Image (cartoon, rainbow, N blue to C red; front, side, top):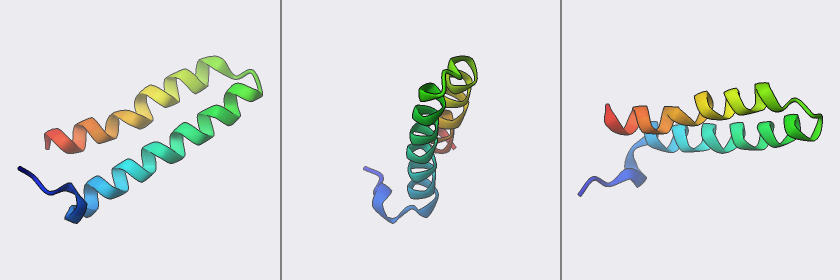
Length: 53
């Protein structure tokens, strides 16, 4: 089993995704739904890409 707690790339990817989610919530409050949806999909996919790498 892989230990993700000691992998700094995974930690940074998770933190980045959490920051993106918070920012998208702000965009949705301002009725910017299209850009928020696209940013959410592209910004959170980094975790899956890092995991596969």
